[in-house]
Length: 365
Image (cartoon, rainbow, N blue to C red; front, side):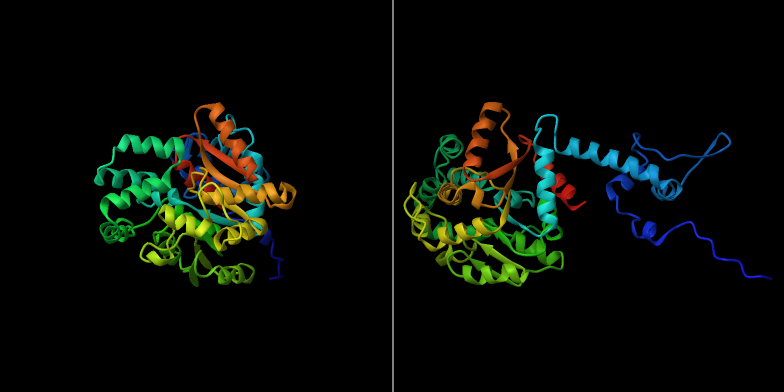
């Protein structure tokens, strides 16, 4: 019997691209998703497919690619709320390109630990204010309107006494038994150095759970030089700007400690080690601020000073994933303040923090 040449219809390129459109494939394979269906019929009878997305992919690759592009654009518009936040898509695409090329460093605030079950910083202070006998609603107004976090912290410590506060502080930020939510996406997005203002150990645990434990952990008042060496080397370091929950000597928490680390309130001393380090990072890398309220705290003062002194043409693009005030005038005021620090917001609707995880997943896809 004569040899017959092997006739194939699937190329290696096609095989290598199977599963690349994960979100699109999941929508096709979801029986409850009515907007996308791949149907196989024999006569008038519908035959169930084990993997409709694969049948579509190999059945008509051109149509599959066309529909996948349409679906991706629709999903981006929905997730990024482009009907309300018109600049979101352009900002997202710019951020995604920079992240893919390794130019973006996450700057993680307390809101990301909240996604793992811990209280955010405002909630924590309000709970402690009640225990300390302060008027909770008055404290809330001071935090939300004046951003008076440092003095509120001082009053709480004074009322509770330093020894009682120190005794309970570590216990208050104990790592949850299981960690999921937006913060669990970070190891896949950023497999390198991370900066955080958080005292807790949630980031350490998340990266360890993902098999990407930090090689070293340094604090803003003890080891910034090691962090600067780690960044270009591609090593996985965690910089805890304001220290750890269990080491008061390296911590930046009370008004006195902030003044020692940054200079007097309202007048950041750019020659102090911590502002000097933040300035260097801000000029060298693109930050993505996650779980940060972006109020006028000491860090933002450093960034605004740096942008004002250097000029925005000398500064990398910086980004912040932020909930938008429902009032458009307030959002415009907020945006102008961010612009003074050369930070571009990627907005999501006020109070709908589930968008943080969804947007981060969109960055991964």
